[in-house]
Length: 224
Image 1 (tube, rainbow, N blue to C red):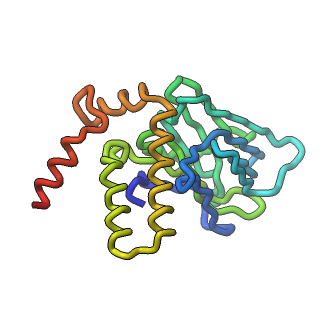
Image 2: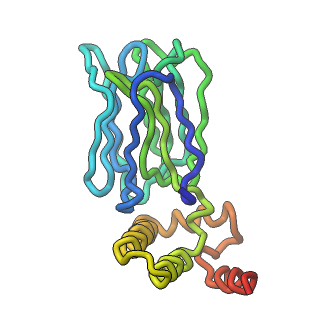
């Protein structure tokens, strides 16, 4: 996935792999509920902006603590830290801050894990899914983010590629699917927060440049 920032998964190797991805519908993470016990994160429930919801891990015991966080419109990750538990075989804690300065931390009820925390590159801050391992509890977890550079790669060029693919006799169904994916992502960027995009633009381009048609012209010139 060219738009995917590097995914860092923290925890152990037990359980079965899982992934929950909203990219194909343009959905982003809207709500995260985390249940923690004395020695690990037991269970998580995720809800995407399109209403899709998944739960991983099944054990919830008396004395467990639940931490719930709902993202406001235009609110994204600005930092994320994950800890393994003390044994290193499960997820131990999750802490993140958002672009609006809100902080959430779900940690083992016995205290912060003694193992070293793992800072995660949140890319653009837009989280479109998670992956990890789980059984009755959360063995490992990683968050999926849209990388910063993808926000500024011309989406019009990608749609042109879809058109060219159709002309090259790809199936209409495949072409329609590609167009819908990119249109959904474009709509998400437009509706969520232009101020956020301008803030990110300063990290990789001169101020005032977001989508610049000169990029398309430069690439077309290079190809010729």
